[in-house]
Structures are given as structure tokens and as C-alpha cells.
Length: 241
Ligand SMILES: Nc1ncnc2c1ncn2[C@@H]1O[C@H](COP(=O)(O)OP(=O)(O)OP(=O)(O)O)[C@@H](O)[C@H]1O
Ligand SMILES: [Mg+2]
Image (cartoon, rainbow, N blue to C red; front, side, top):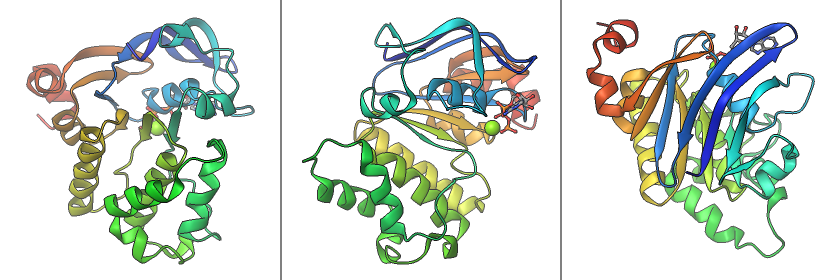
């Protein structure tokens, strides 16, 4: 088990956002967390990546373990540098006034001195040829889909071994959604372990090896992607019947 969340309870101020949830990710898997708005999906991602205050969710019980060891005391910068966990955040959060290349470059701060960055840039530009074409363009002038690609590329530039994606298909037209999901599949086939948060339950469950369904801070169903796609309650609540 690479990453495990165990009976995790989390609060923002006095409001409890996670009510004792457990899930895990094995090496090489794509695992998805699905659920409606406010279910606590982003909170999970921010708790795992130790998002610094003031937005930080506060852990009041439970644990998060990486290879069996608690990471609750790990500094946020070490989550990237030492555990090689990187987040492509909800809403992209790229630096609009910097170029594509500059955004990617910024993410290499976590790398050891002689990491082979050229191979890495080439990998990302192969995965997303659009980014290559636009590498010297200011990021704010990219389309929504291209910005999403950049957010994923930036997370990859940290040299991560586990990629956390918070709604990578948000705001994309259907054809670009499928495209993004194909790229995620390719990344996984190249060896990347992926924890994927998605509102598009149908696409996410088709892609993922396993999934968990969240509802108001609880996990209410879990199983393989195929099992969840076939689960009548999941169908009714998240797959449009
Ligand atoms: N910084 C914060 N301060 C206070 N409450 C927060 C904060 N962030 C999230 N919450 C609350 O925690 C709960 C879970 O929110 P979260 O963002 O994790 O949901 P989500 O599943 O990612 O939803 P969405 O699909 O809309 O992105 C919500 O009730 C939300 O209002
Ligand atoms: Mg969210």
C-alpha cells in the first residue's frame, strides 16, 4: 500500500468536513474519489498534501500514511521533495503572467541538482503537444483545456511518483475531457500512480482501477470501477439513473 488514509477526521474551524474516512492507493493504480459538491474531495487532497495555513484543514483524528509511515508531521515542501507526491489543484492555479515554460520550470524547485530535465520536458511535450507549440506564450492566454494540461504538466515537473489530480476535466468541452482522460491513462501505463478527484463519475470510474464514493464527509461506497458503475445506488445518485 503506497498511500493510506485511516479514519481521518478533519475540521475547518468548528466545522467538520471529514467524518472518519479510510481509503488507500496501491502502487501503479488509478484510484478515484467521486461525489457531489461539498462532499470533501478537495479537503482530502489538501490534507494529504499538507496545504499550509490559513486554508489548511485541521486533522483531529486518524492518520495518513505513506508506505506505512505517518506523514501528518511532514512539511508541505517535503511532501513534494521527499515523498514525491504532487497535486494538480482544483481551478488550475497556474501563473498567468508567466509563460508555459516558466510555469513548468518553477515546478522543478523540488528536484535534485542534476535531474535530467530535458527528458522530463520532452515527456510532457509528447504527452501534450499543444504545450510544446505554446511554450513561450503567456499562460493566461491559453485556452481552458490548455491551462488544465499545463497544471498537470507542472505537477509532473516536480518529478512526482504519485500524481493527485483535483478535477482535471473541469470546464473542458466533452472532446477535450476524453482527450485528458486518455492522457491520464497513458501516464498510468507509463508507471504513474494516480489519485483522481472527479465530478464526472462516469468517465472517472471507467478509467480507474478502483473508486470511492464520498457524501458529506463520509465514504458511502467503494469497489472496482466496474463494480461502482454497476452499483444501483451509485447509478441513481451519480450516473444519471
Ligand atoms: N477553506 C475552507 N474553510 C472552511 N470550510 C471549507 C474550506 N474548504 C472547504 N470547506 C468546506 O468543507 C466541505 C468540503 O469541501 P470540499 O472543497 O472538500 O468539497 P469537494 O468535494 O471538493 O466539492 P466540489 O466538488 O464542489 O469541489 C464543504 O462543506 C466546504 O464548504
Ligand atoms: Mg473540490
